[in-house]
Length: 367
Image 1 (cartoon, one colour):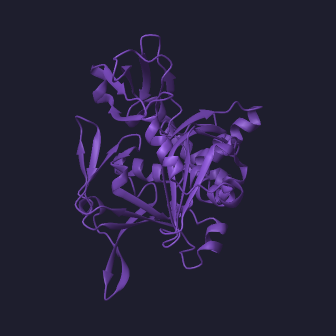
Image 2: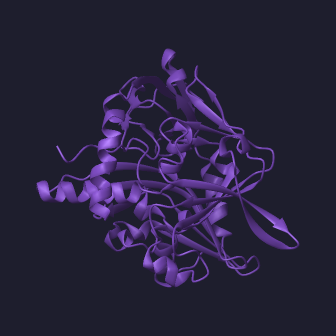
Image 3: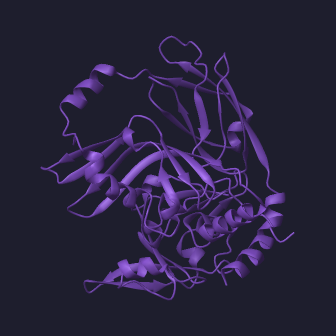
């Protein structure tokens, strides 16, 4: 059943890939204090396979598929900068001023911290479960440099915090990617059992050993895409949720209980508004909490075992929007501000091991 879906679905998306438009971003990276150019600064569109380094004059150039991205700029000894970009930025050069890190403050922060000396041994496995995930793909993922992780535990707040001074190098042999993940911080609140993390992943496609492995990775990526947040956002942008077998329900509290409310007109309830000039879609849901049903596939067996009260006939996820805050969706599925939306349910269970880059699109492997 899984293979049948891949063949049919890839054919549907083949024409989209061929019609995909591109735009070029130009920029320059300098030291904010001296205005001297920074050579070999890393510049990449986060959560994609697209990146480069600056030349001797601090200049860079990136060609990107149509849509929106967070442009990430890093340089050793300087603070990381992030800038939202889209085709609208293609007309002008982007100037990036990087600030030097304040080393003295870093030393004070470390010496006064609650760092756990044997943190990797004590919390390493827990971090991998919460960050990489517990799906079938996660068993084929490995962190190549776990020694760079630092673990801090606050007894007062009952909180675990994990940081890394360098990017984590993740090898995902299930999907055929290596990921350089610049993680800002990972936090787990034991009082609520909620884990949150922020960071900037850069994907690189692995070289398949043969045609069989290439097809295997294509099928695995298609399976990971099916029903994902990326799939949903693109379907919402294209206004074809029904065709892609997504259903949206509002979750409302009545008499102290949560109830799912089906929507007669989902796009009206979301206040769907498309701007053809910028190729973006804005939504502002009538309710803050929305249940997302993916009807084409059941949840993974491991998910049902861990969450026996969840539906078994379809994948159920929840989007929790900040009150009165809209989000903007680009044609590639990128949306902002991502801090205004919390994800839980099935999507919350699928973590880095099942993540795909924004420049991933189906190709027709049947030809």
